[in-house]
Length: 473
Image (cartoon, rainbow, N blue to C red; front, side, top):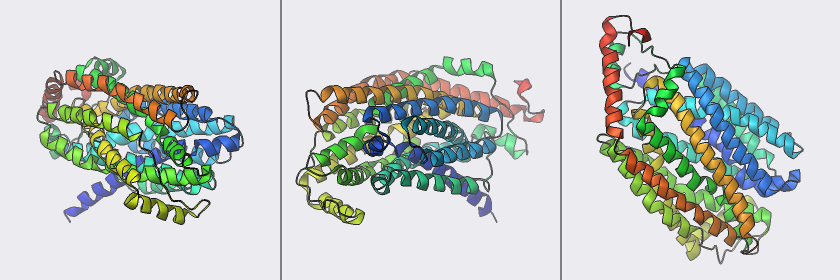
């Protein structure tokens, strides 16, 4: 029965991956529905954009708290209750009749989602062998992209008829996988580290846990500082992309179609344009092969960002001309028309090629960034440091989302839709430059910091002849 433990690990990994996908679906369902929800709740697009900005910040703060607690205690109960929090709040969101009530329940949803983002990351880093870390985290990254696309797709399809439908669907799936999660086994902390294998071979456990004093040590580590700063600038550049569905809807509306038709078609187009995100699996695998002392991952991410930024700027100015859509048609009629456009419409084909290439190169960053920050931190620190990184990224995202909304509104006085979205979104690619600079500086420190962690784990493993407690080291 040698496959049984492997199958159990695979089942646990699959459940965690799906949960990561669903919490991103919960976040991704809102932006494509800005116009429809704003009309229903008598709010503005800008007000709905502020919900996303505040949502992102609350997810980040919650991720720090959930992650720190998970580094001290068992992570499985925390993950289960965190899932139930966001599932319940998603259901309650559909009962909202006013904007303030809608905002309240979305903020509660964010509290639960924060737990998945940090606790789930910590668990996954212990499930997969260290030499496959980039590949595993690329699947984690892809799952988040799939989740965001699922949210957008549900929003643009069933959500076009009633914005509450996708909230119900995502909450139902979340509840299902929360139940399946009860049948998984939490991996032992540190079990994926090769330096700790002698400890687990003796039937012992790795009992080191984070303390408050460790937080200052995490922030003093040079690699952590530059990785955190890089995540801030990366979010500043790409946080504004939550408005891309709105850009696509405006592109279709510019061809003379109604908001309802444009919402369905625009989001279907975005779902297809995002297919390049699946190549993150290849990016994680390449990072594993080329990582060397850690510098290889950083160099790979630099190339990815350097190529993707100008391609994104080009994409935003490509029009969707000569669309042939059945106004007020059924979903399947519109989906068929969109598929036909991707096969015959030169403008749509061009947008696909540019978008696929841009997303492919951008997808190099997330798995390799995640593998880097995992490699330079101890097992009992990873939930906390990823939570802190979510805070840095959330601040960048919130600033980007808010600033983008303000910029689009300001540009409207000079440019009609969708050109205001095209110009505004392209401006944000400037922030890729400081993100690249962070990676270049990081290469000076990552090898030494990674080696330091390896040596510390090896020293702890050598203590296995004595009671293995934190007081020994």
